[in-house]
Every structure is written in structure tokens, then in C-alpha cells.
Length: 395
Image 1 (cartoon, rainbow, N blue to C red):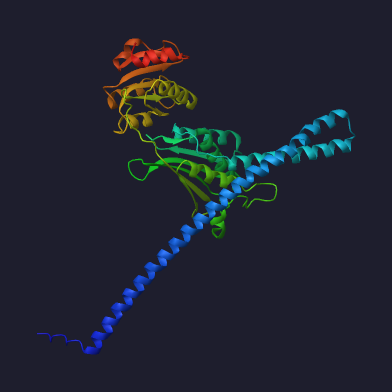
Image 2: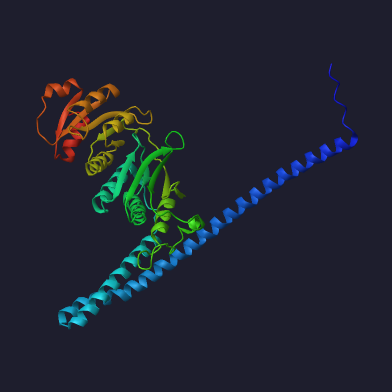
């Protein structure tokens, strides 16, 4: 038998009690410090918001006055050039004109920053906007910058202004390009986060020079820039944050292991509820302009509309319980899809939906093959609003 542990002495019990009290005090102290830090962060956020409001008001007034000053200057340069000046005079006029153009560009950014962005919001396809920006960057950026774009299938729409979101993404892409003078990957992503797709996250990431952690908290301040003199106004990221906040969202910046920077823009997803007048219409087309035009036409008639740019997106949409799809309007020719594969997959995924095929090629596919896959009619491009309405109604 092992001897029983001796009972603690009175002094040992007192020490243990004191140790317990010390531990409780330390825990209370940590909690108090956390509350103080949170309060300080909230106060800093409030003060920063007030500073931004003041800067916006000042920017609007300054830009208005300077535009009035620059207008006669810009107008006078071509008149002086036509009046005839010597070679030296022409060179000086070129300097004046270039400087005036730069000043005009800065003022345009000032007015854009100061503009009230709380206008009407409509459901927009953030993934389509991301693809448009990726295509623009791929066509205009140096070839050494490799643009990669990934959009989650079935991404919900967001309530917003398509032009402002386009500007937000383009500002971030230009910054990423400038951070990679020798080239590298520019990664654009769109995904749903937060469970059940309540938030849409747009990401722009590069493998460039990165941002010093000591100044990360300042990068969204108006007029703060790390670029060389004459290369930046310090309004690009301030405008990005202003647009994100006006859409009820947030923007965060992170350094990346191995070098580079990532920006995450979180935007609240639009509520996807079936329209009271009937099920939703799914528009499937790889051309973003066609998707948005058809969406506008159908929404003007009171239809709830969902869009998809690829076959996987279309299948994901019809399988998502948030979308009660009753009619599918799909292009006959889609990149990466063989023959009638799109309609075969859609028939399996949505056997009860009416399907309208949209074609710009004429009657190239026998009508019997299309009807066997559930296609009720073929809508030829280009089509009128009345023809679209008739096709959706099944007339």
C-alpha cells in the first residue's frame, strides 16, 4: 500500500488561495486590456471616419475652384500653338499642356473620391465584373504580368453599382501591376464566404514588392502613397475603401508569405428570392454584355433573373435552393462545351425548367435534337424585346 498524501498545511493552503487570486486578477487584467484596446481601435476608426469626411468636403471645394482655374489654361494652349510660336515656345507649351492634363486627372480623382456613392443599388454580377477587369488587364498590361481569374460557380449577386465596382477592381489591378515591374502573377478571385453565400469576397493578389507592415494601417489614408513623385496621387486606395464602404462592405490588406500583397473586398450578397410573379429566369451566356442586357430587359418586365457565364456556373445555379429557376435562356455555342453538352447537363440538373436556346448561327442544329433535350424554342440573335418576351412566355 502506498502511503496517503499528507494533508496540506495552513501555509500551503494560503499560498494556493493566493495563487488562485493572482490568476483571477491576471485574467481580469487581460480582459480589461482587451476592452481598452478595442475601445481605442473604435475611437481611432471614428476619428478616421471624421477626417475622411472633412477631406471629402475640402476635396470637393478645392477641385471645383481649381477646375475653374485650369479651364482657361487648357483652352489657351491650343490657341497659342495655332497662333504660331518658335520651337522653344512649342516645347514650353507642351510642358504646360502635359502639366495641365496631369492636374486635371488629379482633380478628377479628387471629385470621384468626394462624390456621394450612396445611390440606388441594383443586383449586379460581381463575378462578371471581375472577368471584365481581368480581360482588360490581360489586354493592356505588360505580357510579363500573368492575369489569372477564378470565379466560384453559382456566385450570388451583390447590390451595387457596376461602374464603381469596376473602378475599385481596376484601381487594385493597376497598383498590383506597378508593384511587379519585372512581371509576375496577378490573381483575381471571387468567392462566397460567411456561410450560405451571405458575403461575396473579391480578391486581388500580386507577388510584387509588398507593403511594409509598419505602414499597412496608413495605405487607405487620402494622399498617402509609397510611389515615386509624379507616379501616384494617394487617392487610389482611399477611393477603393470609399466604394467598398458605400456598398456596405469592407476592404482588408494582407502581406503574403514569400512576398506580395493581397486585398480582400467583402460585399454583402443580394437576397436571392423568387419573384412574386413566378420563378426566376437563368441567363447563360459567355458574353457579359449580352447577360446584362438580357437581364435588364427581363427585370424591366418584373422577372427575377440569375446569370451564369459557364456550364459549371449554370449547373450550380439551378442546383442552388436559393434560386427557383423556372426558365433557362442559354446560348447554343459556349466556350469549352462540346455540341449540346450544355443542354444535356441542364436537362439533368433542371428537368422541369423550360429551356430557350439562343443562337447566332441560324438553324444549324436539327429542331428534333433540341426538343429531345427539352428546348422549347430557338431565339435567333439579334432579337427584339418583344421576341425575348414571347420566348420566355413560351409563345
